[in-house]
Structures are given as structure tokens and as C-alpha cells.
Image (cartoon, rainbow, N blue to C red; front, top):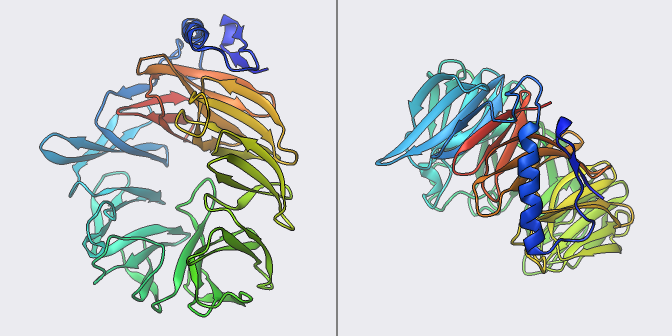
Amino acid sequence: MSLIDLGDAGAWSPPDEPVRRGRGRLAAAVVAVLAAALLVADGPRDGRPLFTLEDRVLDAQLAGGLLFVSRFEDGGPGRFEARTVGGRMLWSRPRSGENEGLAFAAGEELMLTSAYGRQSAQEATATALDRRTGAQLWHRSASVVIGSAGPVVVLEDVDGVTQPYTRVGTDTPTRVLGVDPRTGATAWEQTLPAGSLVSYDGSDTRPDTIGSIDELTAGGTLQRRDPVSGAVTTRTPLAGLGGNASDFTVSGDRVVVGRIGLRGADVYDLASGRLLWRLDQPDGGPFPCGPERWCAVGGDGIHGLDAASGRRVWDVGQYNDIFNLSGDLIVAGGLGNSTSLTHEPVVLAIDARTGVVTHRLTGWVATYIPAGPLSVVTHTDAGQWQGLVGLYDPRTGHVRVIGRGRLGPVPRCRTGEGVVVCLSSGLSVWRLP
């Protein structure tokens, strides 16, 4: 059974099984009424957001105690804004075009990139702004911002690439650079030959922070590079791979490789290059999802695999969205458009070892941004762009509601700097407890 914490207002516990549609609307109304009594530490005492932008929000990033927002405007490409987490405007500047967006903040710099849309890759640009003032520090044409690695920002030079930018496959050499985030000066550069595939190993919570630059050569050798220096650190031939790889990624001590013209993926040992097992699964995965467990998702649900052999050990049907991993628990469910037979949003806590659903929270939607061991979840009023945002503990099934405000049916949320930010067509910010 799941518990909704509404502070001093009391609690509401939904039944373990999905409620019928009419009862679901009634339950949502009860939650909304009770949430009016919510108290949030250091924020508005009635659960209202710290501040709200009503509309025209494209994206938002949190860094260094500040909130950076990308917005569109009628008749123009829009603007970038920097605000305090309480909403006070610090600076604003025009976007250079509709394809320019926020990449990430690195140190005292805010990185912008325009490698979006159907434009040719060589039209992409990389721009660094001073995070505090919005002043432009440097600008590079025909460049794509990849991520940060300590004292450098990693870019790809895409001069002469006339196709839309993609990190999967390459018919031309790939030029990778490490540059100083403050000046744009080149610290190192490497050119990977045509036919090599490139993967940038980031963390689950900060994919823009690069831990390794990985190259899979046309001959089937994995080369890992230090992103700070660009130097090769290890070389591992992958047994029997040859030159028919379509994509790859490094996950912990494994290398997952897709094959051209074949379903599924091969899983190799990173240290030895030995083939460990193969998954005949055409959809998402495989990827680590718990102690001694890997997961794959497909149209029929989520599949738990033995990490050593790839043998399928459990299945959870109907739902195929995995939002967060918390130790030996998987936070999963549906966004209302998954393979669920009811097409109703739900959040599930799944034991990664056994596949047992330990908690089920109906009517709520999880986000792909974790808050430590917790997940950010939302509950939207039926037919309204209003609802609740809370923190879900998969170990207890407990939701702590932290606020109420403008929310779309499937908002994108961010956490950091002591707040949670949720985007729909607009943006709302609540203080984390």
C-alpha cells in the first residue's frame, strides 16, 4: 500500500489495485484539497511554488545556485534567462536561432549548443557565456558541445559534415577536442578515423560529465581515452566482433555492442574483451539495473536478466518505462502511453533480484531525474494543468508532497540547488524539504 504525506493535513492511501476511472478522479480531488494544508520548509507555507513562469519555456538547467532558462517568443527565436531559484532575474540575452539551446553549466561558464533539428551538422555552434553576467566568452562555428571533464569542455568539430548531427556511426573522421571553458583555447585534439564509433561515458545523474571518451575501431578494438588529456588509457580487442558494429556503450565493467543487421546486443567483458552473452532483444537495453541484474525493455514489458549469463530470470508485463534505480529497487511504470492495458499512469517499485512489484502507486507519473534514493513524481488534476509534485521513496511506497501548482500531464523535472523544477509549457520551482 502507498502513502501520500500531506504534512499536518493527514494522509490518503490508495488501494493496491488500480481504481476505476470515476474513483480515480475522486481520489485526485481529495489529494488536491488536502494538499492545500501542506507546509514546505523554507518555501511558501501553502505549498505554492517559489515562482512560476506561465508559458514559453523550452528548457531549464540548475547550477551554482542559479536557474538558467531557455524561452521562445512570437516572431523570434527567443531568449536565455538567468534567475535565482527564487525567481529574481539576473540577466537575459537573445538566442541566436531556434536551434540554439542550453547544454550545461561548467564551473563559472554556461555552455550553449545548436546541434538540434534537421540542419546539417556543420551549421552547429558552441558558445560559452559567463554564468553570472551572461557575457559571451567565446564562440566556435561547426562545433557540437559534448560535455565537461574537469578543466576542459569536450567538443566535436563537425566542419564539412552535411548530414544532421548524430553520435551513432560515422562515414567521415571524427575530430574531438578538449578546450578551456573560459577562453575556448584548445587543450588537446584527436582525430578518430572514419568507421570508428564514438561513445561518451557519463554518469547516470550527470550525463554531461564525461568520465571517458570511448572509441570502437572498425576492426573491433575498444580504445578508452582520458577526456582531460585525450590520451588513450586502454586498448581491448573485442573477441570475434570484426567490423559490423552499429553502436556501443560502456556500462561499468561491460561493453554492450549492437550489430549491423542483427537484433539485440552482444555483452563483452571490458577487461578481457571476452564475449559473455548475447541478448536477442530488439528494443531498449540491456543495461545494469541492480546487484547482479541487468534489464531490457520491450513492447511486452521489462525483463530482468542474470548479469553473469544474460539468462532471463523475471518479467514485469504491461509497463516499459524505467525512471530510476535505487540500490536493489527499480522505479518503473507507465507515462499513460506505454504498453499498459489501461493506459493510466502508474509508478511501480520492483525488486531487481526477483521482479516482485513491492509497491504500486496509481495515478502518478515519475520523472527520469532522481533525487538521490528518491524519485520526483507528479499527480495532475483530471483535465487540468494543475497538480501535485512530491518525492517518492520506493522502499516504503511513501510520497512526500512538496508542492502544488502548474503541471502538465507528463512534466519534465530537474532537481538541484535545493529545489525541484518542473517544466510543461511553463515552469514552476519548489523548495526541497
